[in-house]
Length: 74
Image 1 (tube, rainbow, N blue to C red):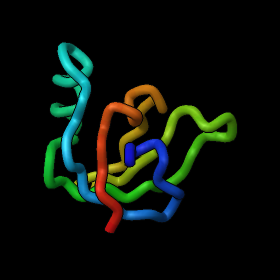
Image 2 (cartoon, rainbow, N blue to C red):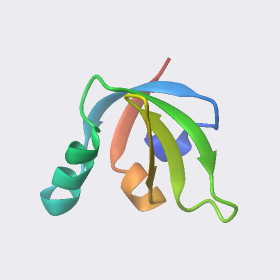
Image 3 (spheres, rainbow, N blue to C red):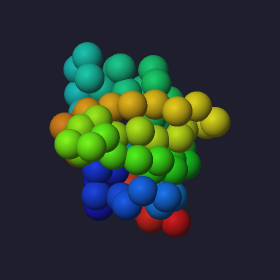
């Protein structure tokens, strides 16, 4: 399951990221790493971007970026 498939209000743990290069580094800098707990807050009206809560901070990322983050619900 990827982060963009999580419903608003859902909580998950990041398993791994498939993003590489500059995008992978950007996501890591934002706090996306294996073991981090993420809560999906909301989708924008046209579903892009998505807003998540990560380590107490709200972060908005594009759906294409969220597809590169594999998660485990719960």
